[in-house]
Length: 301
Image (tube, rainbow, N blue to C red):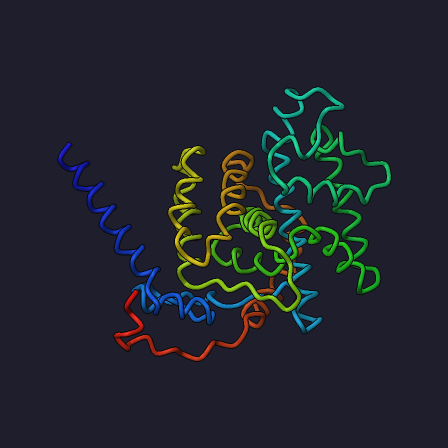
C-alpha cells in the first residue's frame, strides 16, 4: 500500500513539474517558432522531428510519398481481412445495414472510397465482401501504376481528401512501426488536422517519443485506458490537436488489427518503400535557427 502511494505521489510530482515547464515562456517560445523542445525537456533529439507539409513542392518526392502511402493502405487492408472486420462483424450486423459510419472510425471511410473504384461496389458490402473488394482495388491500383503518371496521384488524392496530411505522416510513423499501424495512425491523425495552404505540421522530438511509447505499450493497454494515456501524453502542449485522431487510431488498432500481422504481395514488390526511405528525410523543412532560452527572464511564467 505504501509503495502504491509513493508511485502516485511520484507521478503527481512529475506531472506538476512537466505542467510548469510547458507553461514557461521559454517552452512556448520554442513551440511558436517550430523549434524542437528536446533540450529544454531533457530528452533525446529524434531524427524524425521536423516540419511536414501536406504536399511536397518536388513532384518526384510527392509521387514517391503517394506510392508509399498506397502501399501502406493495401497492407492495412490485407491485415483487416484477417481481423473481425471480415469475420464476426458480418455475422453480427444484418446485411443491408452495414456502413462505415457504424464502426466509429473514419479509416473505414477511406476504404469505402477505395473500393468505390469498382462500379459494381456497394457500401453495404464493405465488410461482408472485404477480401473481394480489396483484391479488385489492388488489381485496379496495379494497372494504374502501369498507366499514365498522374493516375496514381489521382487515386491517392481521392483517399487524402479528408486526411490531407496522411501521406506526409505515413513515412514518419513507418520508421518506427509496421505499415498497417503506420497507415492507421497517419489516417487517424490526418483526419484531425484541417488543411491549410502552405501549412506545415511540426512534430517535435517530444511528439515522436510519445508516439513510440504509446505504440509500445498498446499490446498491454486495455482499450478503455487508451484515451487517458493519449490525453496524458499530449495535453498542456501545442500538440493537443493530435489527441482525438491518435485516440481513434490506437483504439482502431487495438480492436481491429490481428496480433500477428501479415505482409501482402504488393508490399513485397515494393520499390516505393525504398524511394521513401530516401525522400522521407528530404520532405522535412530545414532546421529552424536555434533560439537561446538560457536567459533567466525567458524561464519565468
